[in-house]
Amino acid sequence: MAGNKRGSCRPIEILLVEDNPGDVRLTKEALKEGKVVNNLHTVEDGEEAMAFLRRQGPYAQVTRPDLILLDLNLPKKSGREVLAEIKEDSDLRRIPVVILTVSEAEQDIIKSYNLHANCYITKPVNLEQFMEVVQSIENFWLTVVMLPPR
Image 1 (cartoon, rainbow, N blue to C red):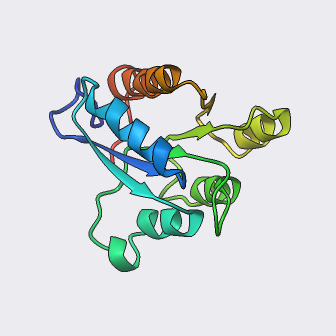
Image 2 (image 1 turned 90 degrees about the horizontal axis):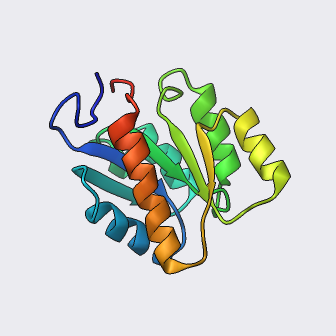
């Protein structure tokens, strides 16, 4: 069993790849109010995300995430490029990737699933709805789903 609360008591490791400080803050708040103990790590761009996942440079000692929340519109390396790299890497591809983005464009949705995203969620602009969406991600991915072992 993986790290969800049915399997063990260790915190769930979440990597949030998001360049919008407001969305980072809201995500932290929503996860803090949730039922599952988690460690939320944040990076602001696609290059940092890959360095974190590959434990390079300042990320050499980080714990591998159990779940990745990935925005598509990122500086330096887009979320699409990050998703493709994750799913092409035999060591990383089992980590579930939840696309959490403002884009409702059909081509973004199709491309994300073609790149093997585990799900695609459009960020609501309403504060209360945003909090509900993040909490529903937590409820589903961290209490219902069996996550792969690290």
